Image (cartoon, rainbow, N blue to C red; front, top):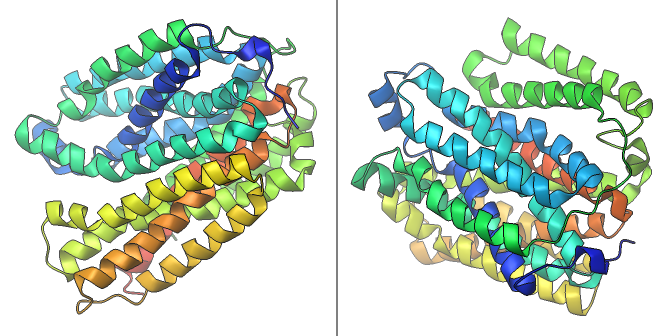
Length: 425
């Protein structure tokens, strides 16, 4: 079990100031996963890039997923505060580049850089929470951050639509600058001073293999349906991904400071928690991405009204995250909370499977609320369980494993569900 120590206490302004900076970071990084979805048609029109517009979304997801384990490990080795400040700075610089892009190639390149920063912001934030608060309090704070992450992912498309219609799609990126500068200023003053772990040579080979593996997974899940699951490109990517997964094992076993410590995977807690995170996020993002589209097509509502229909889901997510966090802090029965969340999640998904054109708004709201409750309870418990099961020296790497599993799960869920919809399943 890890324990918070005094060396990781916030410096100026206390826990509240440190947490406010971290909340802003998670808000921005999560928003940028989905905020461009409603702006893509206008971006394609302005930059004359209809054929390759999907890369605007895929580039961010690909980069953020690929670098997550490396950011986590570097935080363990060199201290999380300077790396948090660096990743946030990279994210903000890239956001400006996105907003000023004059062609699609520039925008995609900037989105890659933005994903590099965003991936670091998310995993380092979750690890910093583990540094700042005691294990018994982690559930409460992780619940708060999980709520912010979930709500930001849901409202991102709505916010992107407002910026696109009322101002310009460029503001979907430029809005990050003022918010991010505030986060940086607070973080520089309030976050705990860096405490370095064991100094060792960075595992560049392991990081490269893992990044290539993540890239292959994201490309397969993002473009499998578009390119054709049996196409040479996808088959080749799948084969290469399998080879990289096999290669990663001996590479990490022989590394002095592996990005993914093999000993960590001897823990059933880490393995099962990562699997739960994968499938829970697959379900979550499938719902978040396709439910508004379903409402618009089947129920004939506008894009704005489809967002209004999602509010019960948002409410369920926020309330369940908060209550689960408090319950975890007071009672400490993480396994019970996790089981309750999984049951609610499954119940919500089964109920969503019964809706149709004749389902009235009240029934939809109840089903969405139940789904939100289930979606909200799981991520906080999974992350807290893993953080409480590993040594302090591996806190960043452990947080990265869960975050990595969630990212791959999101891409996998959206890809599989999209394929099922397009084939009329």
